[in-house]
Image (cartoon, rainbow, N blue to C red; front, side, top):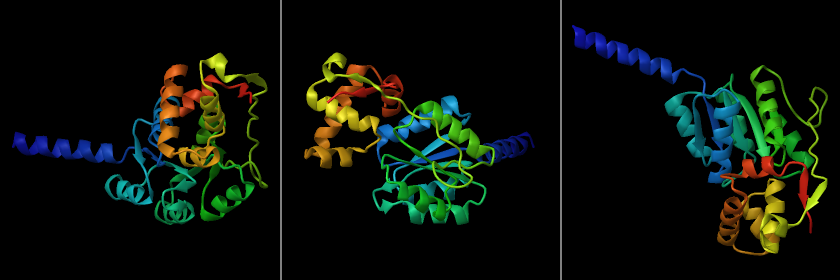
Length: 231
């Protein structure tokens, strides 16, 4: 009898755990995804944060864990723009709050993701404090877009103080890469802009993180808030 009771107790605990609200980060860049996940856990009140690198993995997580309380979705995924995925999430997870992030400053993106069912949009170049504020607004039922009738004003980023790469112990090329990291651009876009291999960009990013003494891109942006990389 005691064994049966113990099994029942374990089952109840499993059910309680599975029903706990969790956040889901969908981003194909491991460092970026991990940065968002860690920040959601340490600053946004989520005990559990899962990571998916594409739309299929996202839907697999939902099959196993149920719908998240919050989904942070990178606009550009390996399969292309995340509009179709946002539509699926909006239909399948009615109560989930959908926040789109991107390094692309094209204003049309905000309009498109809002139409697809997203509740908010934020650029990856924004400071972490603003990200936490946006998450809080979404979790309390609000929306956050830089444009639109019921949007909330985003806090302005100010990187007015120029700093040269050599002041940070970086080479000129690493400074170029860092400048694009601060704009929230992914490795593929950086490689295309600088006409170098994506693997080379990854090596630069690794070296930049080491020289700045940080572990991910969000920490880079936070550490250099109020500054811009001088050309």
